[in-house]
Length: 154
Image (cartoon, rainbow, N blue to C red; front, side):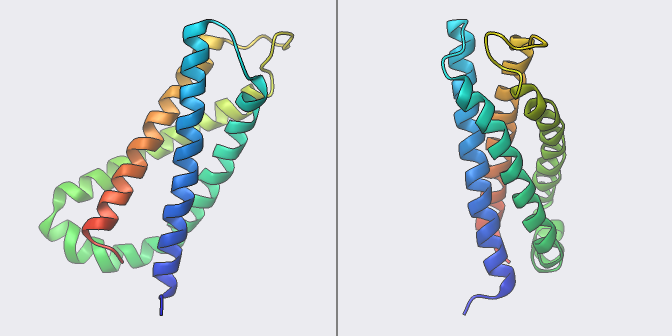
């Protein structure tokens, strides 16, 4: 029988997978559009930031719920005394995800103004840079989280 903490950890991982998939797909779409110099699918560029924001909030909420079990069950017993580098990677992941939240605060409202007749006009280069940065941050955070879970699950 799965414990509640294990179930929440699995849901956290699945939600992180949705977050990573949407972020990376959006980054690749944005990169392609930047290289081509035009938007090929504005509808997807409007949808992805909202999906990413929802997945980010859900993943964050699940992370808050499992953090006490992680703190007692993995961090204090394994990571801090025996693997301080793993603790450092966890802390770095958390800080980068804070930056990702700020990027989302820019991307979600800005994505609503994409398109050829958008008012006010969107700085496309900044939008693409923020989208690609978000994809890289989320990919790093997901890989780090999955690796730490493989080292010491709850």
